[in-house]
Amino acid sequence: MQMVWERLVVCVFVRRVWSFRSSCYALLSESVPGNVKIFRYNELKFATDNFHESNKVGRGGFGTVYKGILSNGTQIAVKVLSTESKQGTNEFLTEIQAVSNVKHPNLVELIGCCAQGNNRILVYEYVENNSLDGALLGSKKKTINLDWDKRSTICMDTARGLAFLHEELEPHIVHRDIKASNILLGKDFIAKIGDFGLAKLFPENITHISTRVAGTTGYLAPEYALRGQLTKKADVYSFGILTLEIISGRSVATATWGGMKRFLLEWTWQLYEEGKLLELVDPELEEFPEEEVLRYIKIALFCTQAAAGRRPTMTQVMDMLSRHVRLNEKELTPPGFFEDSVGSSGAPSSSSKNLTSTNYTSQMYSSSQISITEVIPR
Ligand SMILES: Nc1ncnc2c1ncn2[C@@H]1O[C@H](COP(=O)(O)OP(=O)(O)OP(=O)(O)O)[C@@H](O)[C@H]1O
Ligand SMILES: *[C@@H]1O[C@H](CO)[C@@H](O)[C@H](O)[C@H]1NC(C)=O
Ligand SMILES: *[C@@H]1O[C@H](CO)[C@@H](O)[C@H](O)[C@H]1NC(C)=O
Ligand SMILES: *[C@@H]1O[C@H](CO)[C@@H](O)[C@H](O)[C@H]1NC(C)=O
Ligand SMILES: *[C@@H]1O[C@H](CO)[C@@H](O)[C@H](O)[C@H]1NC(C)=O
Ligand SMILES: CC(=O)N[C@H]1CO[C@H](CO)[C@@H](O)[C@@H]1O
Ligand SMILES: [Mg+2]
Image (tube, rainbow, N blue to C red; front, side, top):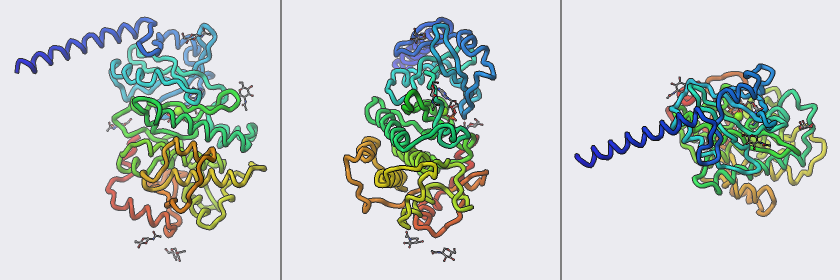
């Protein structure tokens, strides 16, 4: 009894110290151990011209992103998190510290944050050429010519960034939200992964998931979407989908094929079985090395296999991409995906029930009682 009481006292004491420290951080422009700079709200307000509409670069599931310039001239991306899912200042700062020391050329650097009052703001390095979805799938598509060299480099850069998060970092980070809008293009088209560790700030929901923004759940590994089983292999799955988008120039959200709405992955698997994989390639890619493109598509299929355990690790993916290993297609099993029964626009539809893959996966997932609406409350 005595022991328990003492522990309780210690706990309360520690909490006090913590909140004292963090309220100091919120007020003073100081650094927390771990390099993350604490910005004052006014600093960010000034940098973004009072969060002016013209500085808005985009809006995602977590909040709105503004471009800003610090008084020393550094360009920043200011992400104002929606406060609906609010954590205490301590929890927020603890979570931020976990990602603050992560530095890698293929990861968007977190410069600092602001937790003053109710504000929850993240400050990132500004990545000048915007996100991959704009370059690849958006309206600007015509102005930016993504040739095969650039596309393959983006795949490799992304794989490298993910391999770092998964295998070099201790403790490792599962990104949870790999998708085209979270791949930013820097100088010379170097790809940088953004928003790693961010989903952890919203622990009460599995993730806000791409639905709200992209209208699809197509990036989500089935075991994660349906059962909440989150492992590195869920990222590997998303990486596979992203690779298919990069090769096909089509968004997983809006893919229609031959007039029919179909899930990009479903289509790819069908082409694979019919031996017509090259039909997947973006018509805007006029010249490309066929062998290499085929290998990339097959790697994407290895990444999206239904059984998470069969998917390669990101390091293995890097080896596969860089031709250090031969692909053993005998080992390739059908992809897994689940269909969005909500039927929002652009949602993958179930047009071809008797594909082997659909057969396989519907077997696998029909036993699940969870419906998509329960998984994605937002
Ligand atoms: N560091 C950055 N530098 C430059 N532009 C950025 C940066 N971070 C985000 N953006 C831009 O802001 C847009 C919105 O980003 P945000 O991360 O809020 O949404 P999202 O990536 O679409 O969805 P999610 O909330 O799942 O990440 C992105 O599409 C991107 O173009
Ligand atoms: C500008 O300020 C930011 C934040 O304090 C700092 O991280 C960065 O290194 C500074 N840049 C220069 C060029 O001094
Ligand atoms: C998930 O988020 C939504 C809105 O952001 C909220 O209404 C819902 O209660 C959250 N779910 C849980 C389990 O907290
Ligand atoms: C697919 O299923 C439909 C009916 O569900 C059937 O008519 C058709 O023959 C099947 N095709 C193949 C290739 O099995
Ligand atoms: C399709 O499902 C049936 C069971 O419903 C199974 O017997 C059959 O082997 C499956 N076909 C493939 C190709 O997986
Ligand atoms: C393709 C593209 O948009 N490239 C741009 C990347 O950013 C630099 C600096 O803003 C521009 O000069 C490039 O044109
Ligand atoms: Mg993002």
